[in-house]
Length: 149
Image (tube, rainbow, N blue to C red; front, side, top):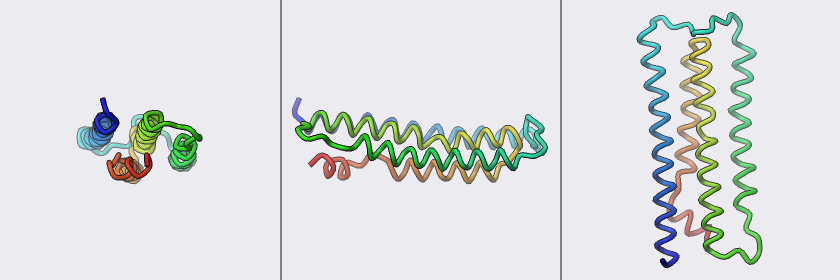
């Protein structure tokens, strides 16, 4: 198998993972809307009176996930001297998958906030952040070829 075929295979695999993560974000949205409609008015399952500290913590964790994405991506995409193209391709694939998995964290935190206290606006904000991250880090052939050259 030549390198071009291997690049196409890895890119297809990571693209499928990206689309699956995007679909899971849509499922989170559907779940939130279903719960909100089914238990109208929905004030959360936990009945916590003061959610403000928890909100700050969850938004802080979402920001930490973004920082972790940036730090890990930088560290994982460092190419040591003598790295051949296949090793670099595997490195790029791992970095992209890890980035996309971490991109889901804000949406999951938003879903937890919604389930605890019925905070649907916070869920929408954090879901939007996750969607934006998935779009930003979606694997593009041109970007991969540029990084590999």
